[in-house]
Length: 134
Picture 1 (cartoon, rainbow, N blue to C red):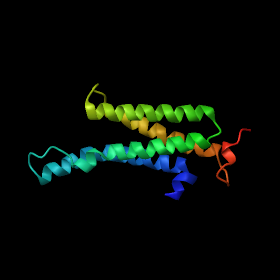
Picture 2 (picture 1 turned 180 degrees about the horizontal axis):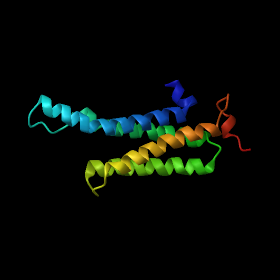
Picture 3 (picture 1 turned 120 degrees about the vertical axis):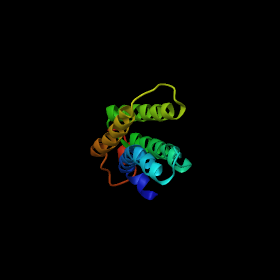
Picture 4 (picture 1 turned 90 degrees about the horizontal axis):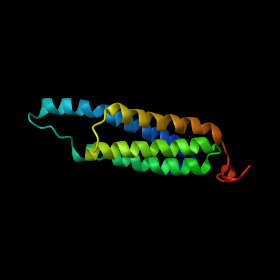
């Protein structure tokens, strides 16, 4: 877990990317499950709640990344992307507004891309160099 403190953008990009893979694999899971058990239309509980695992890892990564980033625009964009993704996941679970999965995929991709882009703004060798005001 030490890597998450040193490279939160790497962890954030990985978590966001795995979230997209999870979202893309859900229809495949339903198709495979349909062949294996007739009239079974629900995914396993652990699969349904994997979204919350990814969003928890993502909020920690966004917090750590924005703490170490030197670009205020990226900081705002990371938090905005995370909030949008969080809302979309809650919306999907609670069924507030019917939205296409495209929006969730886009938010997760955007968050991953922002984490990767943010790697350019903090290439410190020590833990505290990016926290100093320049």
